Image (cartoon, rainbow, N blue to C red; front, top):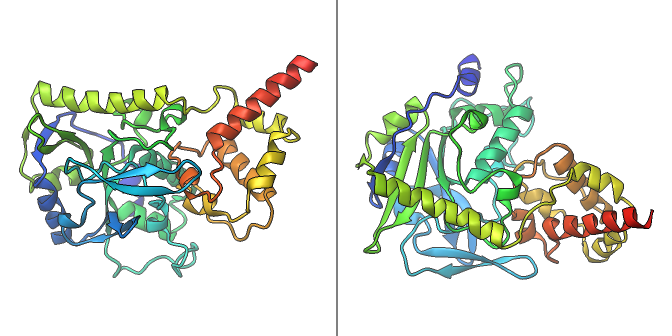
Amino acid sequence: MTDLVDRLAAPVNRPYTDSMAPADALHQLVDELRHRGFRVIAPVARGDELVLGEIRDADELPWGVGIVAGDHGGYRLTERRDRQAFAISVGPASWRTVLLPSSDPAHSPEGPPSGDEPPLALLGMRPCDLRALAILDRADFSPDVASAYAIRRARSFVVVVECTEPAASCFCVSAGAGPRVGDGAADEELRYDLKLTETVGRRGGVRYVARTGSCLGAEVFRAVAHVPANHHTAQTAHAAVSEAANRIRHSGRALPTVDISALLAATAEARTWDVVSSLCTACGDCAVVCPTGAEPDSWSTPEDYRRWLTGRFDAAACVGCGRCVLACPVGIDPVTLLGALQQDWELEAQDE
């Protein structure tokens, strides 16, 4: 277990050099990872659903597929004119369920996976998901506990893809979790092996600006065709992610700038919760898809939703991925809800 702990505990030492790789490089990447014994898990379009599943070839990635959030929860897949593989933002499935599936008999520290289980390569993780893993690492990765999550996480190979096509449900900017992966000292806990930014060239060709984030990432990337990225290519990729962030900001999807834990505590009796109670079916789907929270044992009343939401913000564990919005059958949106609670709070203060 010590070697596994060291993999996450070691200081991050990243060579800040960008490379440019063509779309075909993803085939080489998947082949190399499988050759090294990894099970490659990636977003896959299956029928009308976007899931996280094992792939054996890069052709199985959702090339030319987009995702559109519904007005009242849910989503639908759409066809795009370009052939981008990662223009899908996030689907309802969370990487937490890959590293620690609820059906796994090793769901507790007493039952870690066997040594015969192959390591996982997580291809297509988003910055918000990477932030979620950092939160889980702090909570669940202990040198004294050989938990299933800790073992899978330490052995995993992470390929994070920066967002250039945010969904209408995203609010990662205000949560400080995307759409860009930072490389500064504040983001040293965001551990990845390879970072990609997907762009479309002037002639419509898909290409990737890549940066290695670990020694293993550099070794794997050597098997992938690439050239040093010139200034224009690197700037184009940077601008695409900045544009995605601006679209999220201009959409108005942002968490209140007040202390949200204090806001939730102060508005426990606000009328807005009556509206939530009239809508919430207590299905618990929001908690199931949350990338940082354990799945609920059972939900029976709308009060369970309030406890779950309060727990997310008390633990600073919301990354703004918007999965809870996609999963909710009645379209309850924490951004809208918290905005209404802030208005309740301000009106109450005026009355005093």
